[in-house]
Image 1 (cartoon, rainbow, N blue to C red):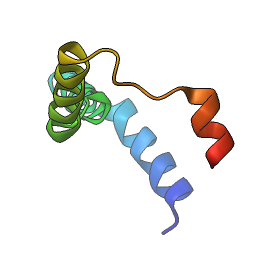
Image 2: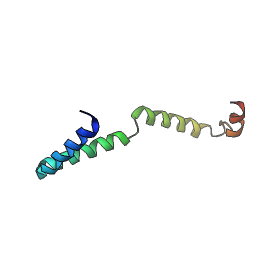
Image 3: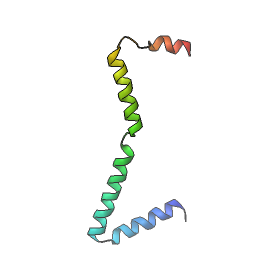
Image 4: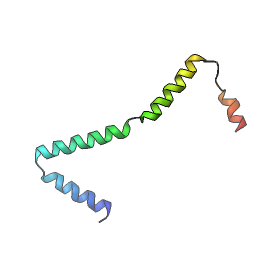
Length: 71
């Protein structure tokens, strides 16, 4: 069964479910969406590390124009 057919069948099921089950499905979908939109912990840690390095030495930066010319 292809994805489009599965989605159609699922939507048909949604129309026939009770309120309690529908609320549970909404919570699951909301949780999935929230988890996917969160920044991974290792990315947050790397950002904090780089910000801390910048705070210690704000003059130690690269000029974007110079860097762009070299690459």
